[in-house]
Structures are given as structure tokens and as C-alpha cells.
Image 1 (cartoon, helix red, strand yellow):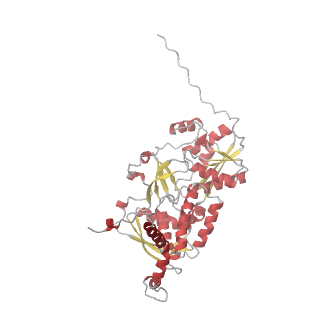
Image 2: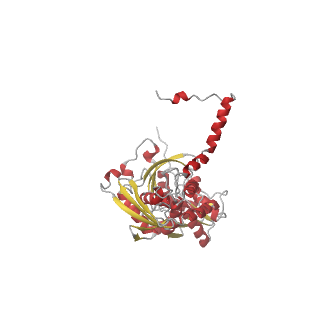
Length: 438
């Protein structure tokens, strides 16, 4: 029986440019040099027929930056920008968030959240410089990052077209992406794919995917890349002092440091002692829950120190109200609402609270723990002589009786009304026998 001769497979042709897509002449792409953003370059050219400019932001991710320009140009980009945004990232995004005390869902220090608006803002600025009419990003259609990028685009230049390939293309796997790279001669380094999705900058390193998708499973030791296992951390504690000026850290152990060197040193100390590991199942903005493991060594130290100084520098009412503000601030940052009037207004409130936040905090680092051991400030509201009640001119203990009576007046009135109600038969008489001792 004769077999039909197999015909050679036809070479895939570039998809035709859809008439339903906006007409784009030039696009600025947020580029990392990884597989996804590398193949986005030819994909944009094939599907939009546009010029592509790549912009890579250096936020302290410690990845190799050399060769990225050549790779971007070889992938089809017409121009490449490498932007060192580390200092701006720390001073204009990290420090304001620390001063606000913003922590998402009690644990997440927002390392990826406030990085995206900065990258997106620089894209918009380069689009203006280059006369581009569109911006693009490599965020997926399931995560928060797409929102953070695109809210920034809308806030800063709503006239720009926004292209999100993951919401358009039919690439669904790493194999699909590699095949596309081969087809269009995109240079790709052949390395083994990690089972984790990671994002790193000078503030943190996040891990998602792999075995973490089962919230019952413990993260494997080999997953962590910044911090040593607390069990393997030094057996001797290490002390560190951090000086603040108006809520901004300026010195470590008495040595003045710029933003980059200060955070780098705190990261070194925190990593050495296994500090800053967080395992969190968080509520994503898009509606689903997601498990993430974060390493934020220096940031964890810095937040603890800042909160310690606020204990002595802020009055009770301001401190308590600021805790409410911190929760809302964290939501704004997590949801990508950095460039909003509300965030600016909250910053104005925080600025006032930080006027007297100048002083020194002493911490002990030991096997994954940041232990507060001392704080002092020339603006401290804590006075030892007042706290010990030893000075009658400041605090007369007899005054407490009247205060307690007034403070408890609503309780007293309610109790009297209930007793009157019992007399009139409106309430049952309280049964106090259940409170008696056997």
C-alpha cells in the first residue's frame, strides 16, 4: 500500500497588520532584555508596522546591563535607552513610602508596586523626546503590573496609545516564545528556565510560581537568593544605628551615606542575618489571590527603625491617625495609583508628621530578627520624669478620678437606663450568679 508523500511544512508568515489596531508610527517599549520583551520588539514591528525604541530602567536589579543595547538593536529596535533611576527610585518612591509607614496587607513592603510607575513615567518622557505616539509593556493580563503601567500612562499622557502584547498575541508558553525568537532571529541566551517568576530591584526580590502555587508547601531553601537562612546566620548578634533627619535616613553607625550606598549597606547587613523574608497570600487588584515570597532585607530594617523613632516623636492622636493613612497609602501604591491627587495629598500630611522625626535608632540583628534596643531624639515627647509620675506639677494622680468619671460617663448613663428598664419590666434582671466563684 503506497503512502502519500508528506509535503514540507510551510514557513509561518508574519501576521498581517490588523485594521482594527490603532495606526502607530513609533512606540517606546519597557525593555528588560529577557525573553518576553525581546520577542515583543519584532512582534510590534510585525503587527503594528512601527518603529520600536527600547528603554531599560536600572533600578538596582543587579542583572548584567552590558550587551543589552546590542541585543535590542539586533532584535529590531531602532534605538536603546539605558536609564539609571536608582537614586530617584529611593528618594522619590521608597523613602516617601517608608515615611508614610505603608505596608500592604500587613507584610508586603511594595517593592514591585512602586517600581512600575517610575518606569512608566520615564517611558512617557522618552516618548515625548522621541515624538513617539505609543508605549508598550510586557506585563501579563492576569497581574497587577499591567494596571500600574497603564494608570501611569493615563495620568501623564492619555493621548499615547498603549500596547500590551500579552493581551493580544497567541504566544502561550516559553516554547512558543523561543520558537518566535528563532523565527525572527532574536538573540536569546539558552539558559535553563527557573520555575519561579522573579522581580528584583535595590529594594527587594520577589518569587512567584512553581511550588509556591500550593500555599501549604514550604519554600525550598534554594529558592532564596538575597538572604541566608536564619538558621545559618551568625550566632552572634550585630548592632546597627541609623540616624534620621525629618524621617529620612542619613547615616549608618555615624557614617553619612547617600541613598544608594545607605540602602546597599542595609541590604548587606540584613542579608547576612537572614532578615526580611515574607511569605504572603495577597489579594491582587485584578480579583484573585496570589502567593508571593519576598526578600526585603534592608527595607525591613529601615521600616522597623522609622517606626521606632515615631514612637517617641509623634503625639498619640497624630500617630494613631497616621496608621489609618498608612493603610490607604499602601492600597494606592499597590494598585498603581501613584500619580493621583490623593497620594499627593497624603504625602502633604506625612510631610507635616515628619518635621520632628530627627534622631537615632539602635537595632540588634540576629537570626532573621530585627530587635529594637534603643531610640533617642532631641524632639522626643517621652520624658522619664513624667513617665515615672514623680513630678506632681506635671501629673497629679488625684486628677485621674475626675477624668475617669467623665471618660466613663456614657457607660454609666447606659447602665442607669438599663437598671431603670429592669424596674419597669423592659429588661430582665441581670444574672450575676454566673460570675460567682465556686
